[in-house]
Length: 295
Ligand code: GUN
Image 1: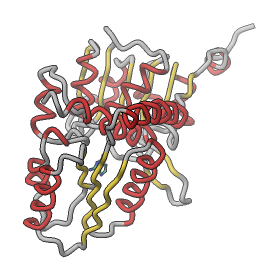
Image 2 (image 1 turned 45 degrees about the vertical axis):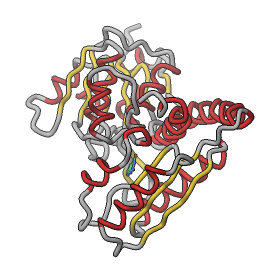
Image 3 (image 1 turned 120 degrees about the horizontal axis):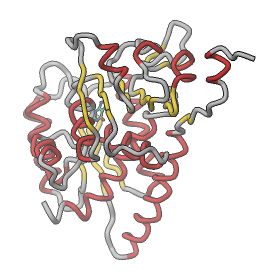
């Protein structure tokens, strides 16, 4: 009997990477660590600043506060009005920089248009930069020194490692070159000894480039853009995108149902990369208690 390719494929197990479960495990581990630190007299504390009341930002900030409460990290919430001036925001950051009780400072992005985002990021003390956005943190990552790493790419490394996926020597293609995801992601994969290509909106022959990837990491911001023509048989596909379609259902940058049968492992949306970002923020806050003394 001759099997069609669809029938052959159905014999292979595809690993659906459960980011929700991995994130929960990391938070449990951190909870124990924070409790142990407390008995030694160290309380981890994160300051979270939101300017304005963008609904999506309010949801993210609420989730960060909830995660802090679960792990045992104290959170200081600063909910500032949209009309806050840049000077007012910078002086709050400077006050928190000087407060020895505060280990981490997070300013939720995006900020209102009248505030210079780069100036804000640069004002946060590198020792308290738990988002990993400060130029010093990015520079340290680039030259292989210890420091804070942007939470979403750091979470993807954890997803791969905790799913038993080898990175060393693999062809990795990252689509997207943002400061928050694409660039740090490529540096982290390089640090793990992958061969890394960074593709972006001007890349020629994108499908062919992506088809080379053993590990394809997608952060393009376009719903279901990645179809099977972009994916090598047996590749690992990591989807950073999150979108709400017309029916109110969440989807990623990858057409999950179409791509999944071609993969050896894939992250779903929701429940893949998303939950890892907050877990890694909590990890950075806990690390800060130790790391801030070394920077
Ligand atoms: N806005 C969207 N994602 C993030 C993030 O990871 N950190 C901050 N500070 N703002 C964001």
